[in-house]
Image 1 (cartoon, rainbow, N blue to C red):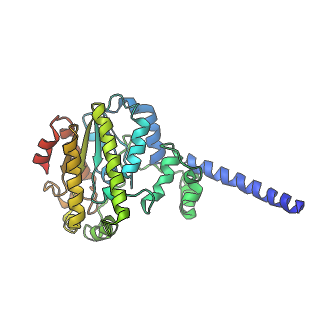
Image 2: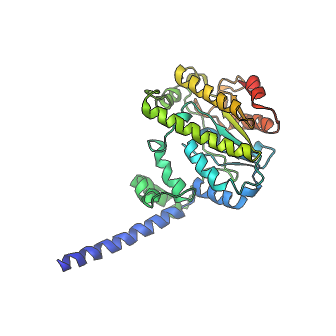
Image 3: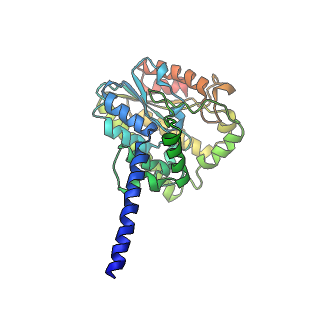
Length: 316
């Protein structure tokens, strides 16, 4: 029995060492999460406009075109839940913060960090220090497909390719070639549209997201920071096939929140006629052309101090 234990121990120890080494090497590979964490650690005190949110703002708002000191802390699949984790970590360091920009997408109020496909991102926020949870949930090695991890190893350690796909100010460089604007509409809407929207579970998630959003806005109101909620332009193949009920709930709740707080505005730009086909990467994301256009527009709003009701009338 003792020999069996010793043999097992001798087998497990080297395996454990290999796992630890692999995890350390994975963590060492630079990516957008590690980059943005490092940037915020060093520069949070200088940021005047902070962009949060999912891929819609990650690729749709380029800080380069803002007149204020702006950083894009958004990322693919970044829910309100993760926005708040980032915000809570740095809010006391953002001493020059004047404005926060948060997107309101068609599925935003029903995004749940515990479910797929967005739950896969949890490990990155934990592993790179945006917040803490269990040790297991922060392990890159066990959170991703082994093949994807192997590709990351090969790309960085063998091919010496950088894994960072954003600019110095956090804007994604990924959305640079247009996809089919019709096919992407229906494939995206399949998982953007919430089934059984009034179910007990969906109602719980909705209330949690509203509470998260309100908590960010409330802190900002108490600290003289403006919050800009907005819905990005979408191509007609996407916006014309939304669930009327889901979209109505989304717009009504965003407008209600904006009316509640005197530091908050909501701009519904989903059907803005200034955006042409070339301005879209797919049916719900902007191309580099659209991002430049939207960034200039949002900057013009950041520079104007008008109450929420005025904005809703002008841009609804």
